[in-house]
Length: 111
Image (cartoon, rainbow, N blue to C red):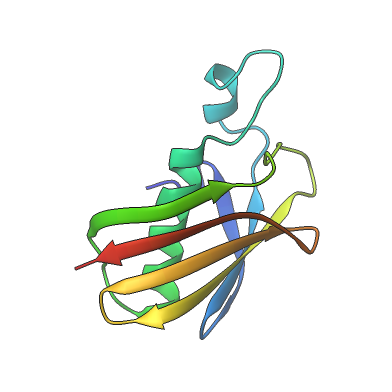
């Protein structure tokens, strides 16, 4: 849903993905004018989309737990995020890194 609108995939690995944020995305026009920031719900949605790519499934979100946004993800011409997944079956943990620093983490229960 958000690929090529908010981000593009740079690299896929068995348990990780690297994406580039698209600063020209219409998402940033509304969130927030004058101080654009990547919405937390978008970070979760991107995690689901990337999980489907690295695990070859189509996960449906049942619940999310332990979501922590540790630092804002601001758009810019060279902003890349690395999603690292751990877990199996219906529960997957995602850690999101920006410039090598942990910026968010979440646990996703999927079907």
